[in-house]
Amino acid sequence: MSTVVRPSGPLPRRVYWVRRLLLILVVLALVWGVTRLVASTASGDQAGADPSPAVEEIEEAPTATATPTDEPRLSKRDRRRERIKQERQEKRERREARQAEREANRARTVSAVLPPPEGACDLTQVSVLPSVPTGYEAGGTVDLRLAFSTLQPVPCSLDLDADRLLLLISADDEQVWTSTRCRDAIPEQSVVLRPFWTASVQVPWTGQRTGDRCSPRAAFAASGQYQLHAAVLTGEPAATEFTLLEPPPPPKPWRPKEPSDDEEADEPPDDEPPDDEEPSEPESQTGGAPEPGDEELSSND
Image 1 (tube, rainbow, N blue to C red):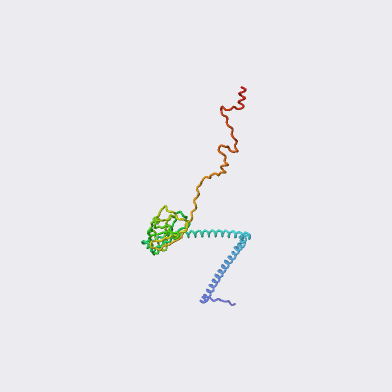
Image 2 (cartoon, rainbow, N blue to C red; image 1 turned 120 degrees about the horizontal axis):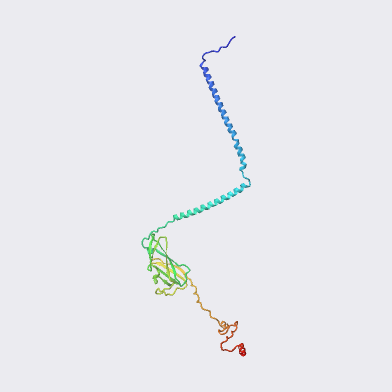
């Protein structure tokens, strides 16, 4: 009987390398298999845990929804509140904007410092424009208004007095009043004139006429139409018209009413009593005639 005898002794180097490669491949296969198993297990656990929140959301959704009848009512109330809130906010913003604008205007308001006059005005460059307000009545004081201006490019000072300012009031080419006779009517003052500006001065007129001289006892000018002429010395004159109204009549003095002849006839005399009064009996005096009762008493005695 024959037997198989395995060779003994060291094997070739190639056999060992093949065995080693096979062992490495088996180990890698085991590692890859374990990794896949762990990954599939983790994904399965996650997939199994996800459906529960979905179910919870589906179950909780009906409880969170409001009824169809309540939802529009709440939204309308909310819109109304929002609109009121927005209107109040807009009013507050407008009020704050106006306040800010006023403060800005006050901040922009600055005091203008005008330059001082540079010497006296050239009278040939000065013009005057007279005017008289309406509503004055004859017999009273009238304010004559004069507007001065200059053509000079720089401010200047104008000294007014009766020698530099001439005023004349006339009616139908008849002289009524003039400042050359009433020199005290022109106030002595200094006026600053500036380019493109006018300076106003008032001169009071007593309303009286002037004859050869200015008298406080002169007659007053009557009501009617008058002309006021004004001029600065060596300057061009200017004129305007005005009207003095008729003053109201003075009130009549009070006098007691005198009775007429008919009223005197109707009144009873002082010594006669009125018709509705009975005549009074004369009072008895001591020592007079006795009464009827007294006579009877005396006879019985």
